[in-house]
Image 1 (cartoon, rainbow, N blue to C red):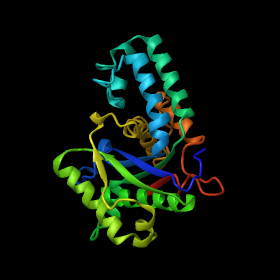
Image 2 (cartoon, rainbow, N blue to C red; image 1 turned 60 degrees about the vertical axis):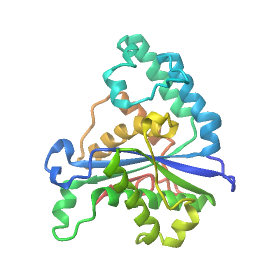
Image 3 (tube, helix red, strand yellow; image 1 turned 180 degrees about the horizontal axis):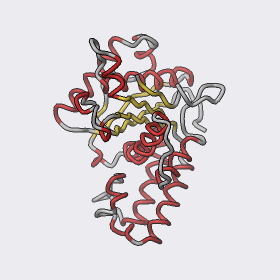
Length: 267
């Protein structure tokens, strides 16, 4: 469990699955946008989490400090270089087992928001919240509420998407910090968050939190979509990751409720 020490500083690392383009909402493959946030204490990232992930990469992919290998879910699944060793079924099984064990041991909290863009488009014919900003607002609300409840402070980091997209992400975050939301005031944002600016970094910077967020975001999105559509998702390795998360990593209410606290469906 995350320790409650008042001088700790936390960071929420964000990864997204899907896109915010409402014009693509009719495409079943682009209907949903999911933002997943991984919350970790910064000293813990440096002293424990980073070392654990680097050890895993060295063992299976011979990652070196001068040329670190960056964990990326899509490339891992497709066993593309530098992950071609996973083409060996025994190595893949061993890696998957150790990845699950590593994630289980690491101390972090998860918050995820998923929007059905098709439903959002149908429901709001005249006024429509930008899907990304809508999701980010709900995600950061829950993070700020969590920080306040713990009596600690933190900031937010997202993976760089490049140029205009990064500017859009930063502008969306700055708007939240300046204006607040219906449920979290500007004062609360200012008190809980240590920066008015969203930190945006490329995954190539070998940032542990962003790599963890990348690994878990897709399994979370897949499960949330299945629940939204009342379907049973296909059993995959991602299902194992989701099971691990739902059994102790998601943010919860004081009574242990995940829905609305650790997972939120929109609109």
